[in-house]
Length: 121
Image 1: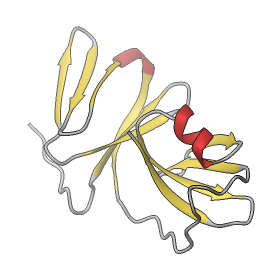
Image 2 (image 1 turned 120 degrees about the vertical axis):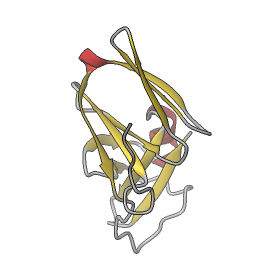
Image 3 (image 1 turned 135 degrees about the vertical axis):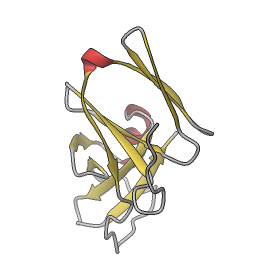
């Protein structure tokens, strides 16, 4: 049995071998292993990963230092990063990014340099 302080490290980030990552709230998170599959379940998420597709998993802090906020309706091109800083690519706009990303929390940077945190559910 392991326990993380959910105040200091409120997310468990799963990084896959293809470079994509997803973060999950550690609040009431249950992790099980069965036949080479890791299963994550909490109040809002249920995900499974084969162990061969995972490169690493780690607990992450919440602070991203984001001061500027842009509106969801901003239609400019955006770059998307995981909260741990992994580049998830460029998208036409925020709404397009939300439809293409897997569940998790991301940092979005617009062409004008403004930042925003988004949650994809």
